[in-house]
Length: 126
Image 1 (cartoon, rainbow, N blue to C red):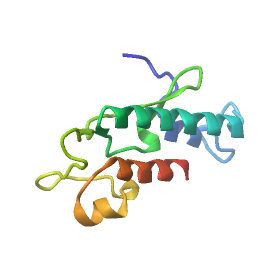
Image 2: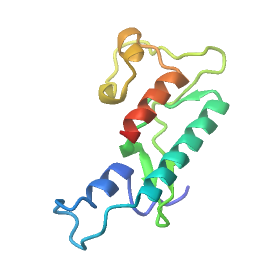
Image 3: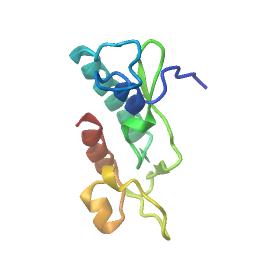
């Protein structure tokens, strides 16, 4: 397994805010080029998952890991599900879900698809 030295994208970005107490080195904000690069890397990772017929179900900045060369890769596949035989996954029973990143149809019907992953990707970009 690859070591992602800089932690998750959420904490990495928070630590670089000018008003952050964690920014003791006065690290600059990432460039727009970096944001575009990360967005592309996350999209490529999600496209790869979709090609394998997997739905991540928990895409968020906290689950995108940053390497020492600032490459971003998707992690935390604990909620990922195989949707090979069906185009969706509907969990049985009650389970805590990351509602702030969930697509409206997933909240309403409890169904997860690659389309609901696209919604979560949009939230990550926001």
